[in-house]
Image (cartoon, rainbow, N blue to C red; front, side):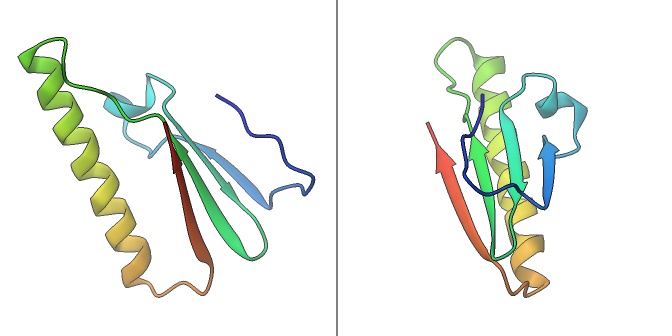
Length: 83
């Protein structure tokens, strides 16, 4: 996963900070001066029941993080790119 940008980000993070989800390399977060870009490759749940549960847990983690960001009332715009 990668992002091409003319502008250098202020900060780069790989993952949500949760080992279970971060080990698959699905999350790239770039903070710029005026916005934060979330580039996420969301899992599908078609392979098995356990994979479906992983997908649902991943989505819940993402929504919890997004809610905590919005709750802080950050002044930056949030941009979400996904597959």
